[in-house]
Each structure stands twice: as C-alpha cells, then as structure tokens.
Amino acid sequence: MARLLRPLAGNRMTSISRAVKSGLGLTTWPWGRVVNLHRALNTLPHTDIRAATGLDGTEFEFLLRLARFPGPRTHASMVAARMGYSAAGPTKLVARLEDKGVIRRERDRRTAARSGSR
Image (cartoon, rainbow, N blue to C red; front, top):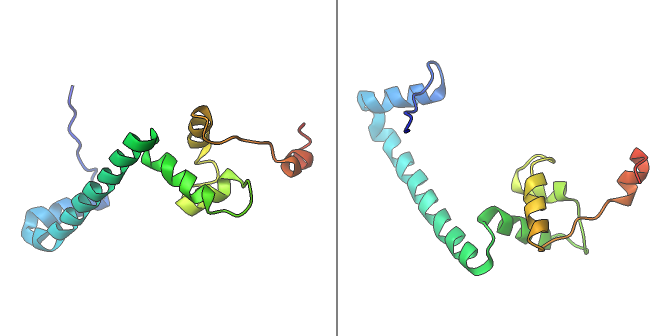
C-alpha cells in the first residue's frame, strides 16, 4: 500500500513547498537538479563497487578510510569520525564487514583494562 508524504506545518519543507508553489521555484529548481545529479553520480560508482567487490558503497568507503590510517589497526570510532558518523554509528557496518571476512575486530587492551573487562 503506497503512502503519501506530507510536510508538517511549520517545518523547513513547508517553506520550500510554499516557495516552489508561489513561483519562487525559479530560484530553487536548480537545487533539485543538483540533488538529482548528485544521486546519479553517486549511484554509478556504488553499482560498480558492488559488482566488483560485493560491498556496498558505505562498506567500501569505510575500508578506504581505514586503509589511510597508519599502522595495522585503529579504532572504528576514528574511522567513523572521518565519515561524519558518531562513535556508535559504525557498529552494524563493522559487524557486516567482519561477517564478510574483510576485517577482524580485536579488543582494545587499554580500554578493557580501564573498564575492568577481560
């Protein structure tokens, strides 16, 4: 069953909708084109990456950013920060990459020692 989306009163989308309907769309329509172009340009590499590696674009980006860190390992939260995610953001992403056998998680001995974990 299809559902229609309707902007809530008082939010930014309502203002944009009013501007487009009132004829101010002549100044806002290029942004719609930019968004569509970005989506198209972003979709092509993601499709190629998936075909070549079996990874989605976010997984591939995570691995690229991970490879740029010096040394054999780093914290997932540091990679996530470079991607614009919160520290907890990559939890499922890292689990998927581990399930695919691309990375291996290790317990940080310094953090475990501070928290009393073993």
